[in-house]
Image (cartoon, rainbow, N blue to C red):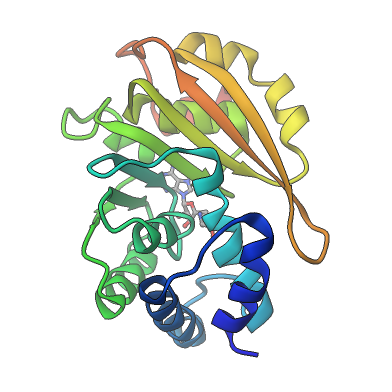
Length: 237
Ligand code: SAM
């Protein structure tokens, strides 16, 4: 079975429809992901089933938690090979997706893959989150921020909440450790203006568990945050 056949066969169980346009884009994405992976270290998941389930389906689950409306904006922080941001951009052509990462060579691959897929609703930003989060171009400009496999929750909140408009959300894609990370993030939430809105558990085909934490931004983030990288690492909130 091809990557798209595996994805289609499993997505319906989650109420996710893979239309023709999305199938064509993801087919190109899967092929190029493997090609790029031979050149640079993009992702540890390289087999067709893994790409279909642990990358594409996993990222599409974000659409079960967030209500994306045309014209909305998302920033994917630490997008790596484009997860979840490029998958979301492919699935929702009428929302604007910013893909941010501090590693230039990964972004070069992402830019090439987006172009070959015909995905036009993406903007690529090469920066550390802590730096872009201070810039008026990006600060409190987004309806949603997303992040998968970038840092622990209390650190991630400092990376992501400065980008989110008051009333918007940060969607954190996590594995089974979510509950402990939430317990450790109370001070970070309070300091940065976030509140846990919901924790959404999923089991992927094959049995891996996932949680998407929806953190609502309930008040503006103080201009003191994000702090410089060294300080965040040394003294997480
Ligand atoms: N989100 C992708 C995924 O789920 O496959 C990539 C995960 S990869 C393990 C972590 C990515 O986050 C890397 O590409 C790294 O360059 C990026 N990253 C880590 N800290 C960052 C920061 N402070 N600002 C921007 N990017 C960051």
